[in-house]
Image (cartoon, rainbow, N blue to C red; front, top):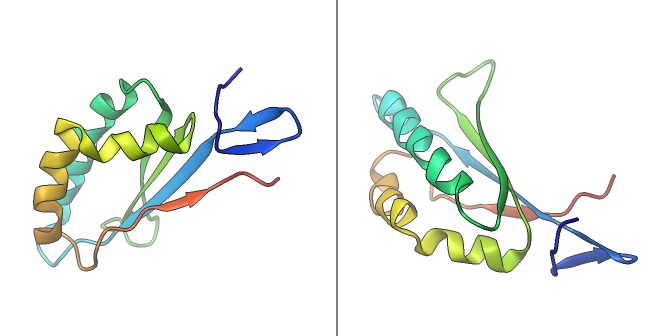
Amino acid sequence: MLHGRLYSFGRAALPLHTFVRFEPLTGKGQQLRQELKLLLEPTRAEPGCIRIHLYEALRDPLVFYIHSEWVDEAAFDAHPKLPHMTRFLSLVSELVTHPVKGIRTKQIG
């Protein structure tokens, strides 16, 4: 049983799901792909991370998406403060066409 505390439905707490889209600047696609891959293992080791996966668009393989699932919002809030994330956040603006914005969601069906 997950011990989330942000979203609850009845008695069972629901985890937090996040989605982030990354579109690289021209010529930065491979570097962005590598930097995103470097985030996966340390993020999976975080105590509040249930899962994290990196995806690429089928029709535009240089557009990437991260979907992650967290036990609660507090676990996700701690995520950007960790060393692997502070490193990534310090360089990502030089790699992408738009500011990085994570969308926090809950499953509804």
